[in-house]
Structure formats: structure tokens, C-alpha cells
Length: 503
Ligand SMILES: [Fe+2]
Image (cartoon, rainbow, N blue to C red; front, side, top):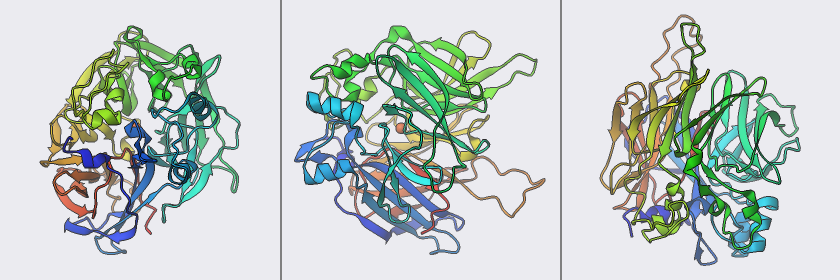
């Protein structure tokens, strides 16, 4: 068993606003709540789920009191997301077929195309004023940010049929809209891009407005996309499916049907956000990825049209998907399709090789340029205000060492990195929270540095088998404080800081 195995252990306890033991000091300005999502239970009816992405959703909330609140304290709540999938798992001891957990042929058909799971365990977001837990099926679950109680499904007023969606929506403050991506499978398959305006009619359900769509023969597995002021950028790795495979008996879960076809290369598809036209299409040598970091347009000063800059965490191939099967993360061998049948060597969360890379895509044609910036990163984040424009810092989980995961702050202009490590600790996704600007107005004031604020990340201490929340200074990356959770928190995926959630 690898040292990090408590990260894949189910958690029974649920807490409500528990004051955590603290070391160090939280900045007095920090007010609001970090809400994180991830699997909380890995067994159903006595059986392990097959893939890390298939554990039952649990929300975790860290509330910061702020100056007017409870004086530098951190208050922890956690709750299983009580969904249909949760009820079926707990009461009927049955798991609906999900990302990679195989069901029977009938379950398979039913689950993916017509009765997808509502086990929304990947991310959280605020969409049109509603807080929602997200996964990669079209079923999004509303929750109360104060109590973390599930409040039923978030449905849309439109009738757009989609089958696989991203759990990484992108919000554009300037345009006042959330942009999303989805795939529709069928005799014809389509990538669909849409927007949800922040301004929605009161009392009604939000609507998705189509931006663009593209017919594809073999859709790729797409986990996230990128947004610039002018374009929606779909980066399409050659990890693709012939959707007819979903209909064949004995095909396993959703992801088991995808195949690595490196000869296709990885395509950059940029759609104009106004016209919906496919404005840019370029192919680069093959790579796989889950997470884009940021993207922007870099305009040339000499009147030429410039380039798209897309930062993401790239992998050589899609074997990382195989590596995240429970059998692999628990140190067993598993041969897999994505690796061409090669067995995994053992505990695979150690020394994972995600490469933070910058891709430059010339708008008027020409070769896509790739520059590697930092080796061993996952779960990348940026300061909220740095999105869609030239920026300096990416924050991520640092994965290059064995026996621990750290945190890294990488200057994306120079590749220079500052890191946080602690022996035997496995840190998760770091979320940057900006320090609010001093005073009102801001006319003529110099803008604060991009990294002025704090970085919040959960970390598992493999020795005590408990978790902490670490608070780092955004600029120095020094640890300011840590809050002790009285148990482990299973390894999760993504979260969001909501400054407005103060109770
Ligand atoms: Fe993700």
C-alpha cells in the first residue's frame, strides 16, 4: 500500500461549522468560504469503485471569519451530496455506471446515454446565481452554500441535448457570462459551445445560448477548454471514441471506450465568440491533458494578427487515465488500452509527470510552438483577475517527488518556480484568493500585484492520517497558517472560493 492510501479511504464523519485547531495566523482580511468537491466514499455494497473519479460526492467547506467575524478562525463543514446516486448507493447498494465503473450491458446503455449519474463529485461553480456541484454528465446538483445540503438538480430552460460535459466552466466577468462546452453523441457527433448569461429572468431557469458547434467523426475526451476575449479554444487530444462502442455489450464504463491515436496529433480549435466561426484550426504533435491553465491573445505590434497563447498541463499520452484507476493508485498492476497493454509499475500518484507547457498558436497560420515551463504539476489555478490576459503566475499541485505532493507557484514568463513541500504530506489543488483592494474607488491607484493574497490548499499528513488546510502567502509562498481537520479528507478534485459565503 502506498503511503498516500488514506487519501483513498472513505470518510464517514460529517461536521457542521466545526472550529478547527490552528497553527499560525490567518490574515484578518480573509473572509468567505472555500468549497471543495471530491469523492467521500469509495465502496458501494462492499465493493470498491473502479476509478478515482467514481467515488460518491462529498462537499467540504472551510469558512474564514474575517475581521468582523470570528477573529481569524477556520470553520469546517462537510456533507455527502445527497443525490439519486447517493441514495441508490446507500439504500440499494447499487452504483450507477459512471466514468469508469463497469456496469452490465443494460446498465451501460441506460447510464450513459439516457440515465446519466448525478454523482456530481468533480467541481463547484456559481451559475446564474445558483451554487452547483458539477461532474461530466449533464446532471448538475444545486446546493445550499451555508449548509452544503443538496437542493435538487440545476436544469436549463433550453432543450439542448448533450451527453458529456465539462466540469470546468469558464466565467467571463467582463461579458457577464459563463461559457461551457459539451459533446453530443449519436449518428452524428458534435462539440457544442454555449454561454449562460449572468442576467437571467428572475424565478426562471437559466438558458444556454449556442455559440458554435462542430461535427466530428470520433469525439475526443475533453476535460476542460480555454477562453480568450475573442475565442473559445477547444484543445482536442487524440484520445477519441467511436461512439458506436458505447452500444456494444461488455464495453465497461464511459472512459474505457476511448482509444489513444497519436497519429492524429492534438488539434487547437478556436471558435470566434461572436460569430461562432471556426477561426483557427492547427495540429500540434500529440499530447494529452486534463486542465488548461489560462489563455489569451497576444497581438503583434507590427500590424500582424499575432497569436493565441494557451497554457495547460500536458502529458505524453493518455496513460494517466489508466493510472487513476483505483487498482493503480492502490499499487496494483493493471494493463490498459491507453498504454497499449503495458502494466503500470505500481503506486502512480508518486512522481507523476504533468508538464506545465505554453503553446503559441499563430492566428494567421504556421506551426504551433510549445515551451515546457515546469515538470510535475497538476490541478493548476490562477488569480481570478489574471484570466484571459497576459499574466505571470500559475499555482498548482507539485507532483515530481516520491512520497509527497507539494505546491508550486510558477512564473509563466520565466519558468522560475517557488515551492512548498513537507515530508509525507500530499497537497491538493491550491486556490488563490486575492486580497481585496484597499479603500473604495481605485481611480488612479496603482493596481496591486497579481500575487497579493493567499493560497489555500488541503494536504493529507500520511503519518497522522489526518488532513490540514494550509494557508500560504501568495507573494512569498511562505506558510502563514494551517488548520487541522480531525480526520483525513479523501483526495478530491476542485473547489472554489466564494467571498460572499460568510455563514
Ligand atoms: Fe478537472
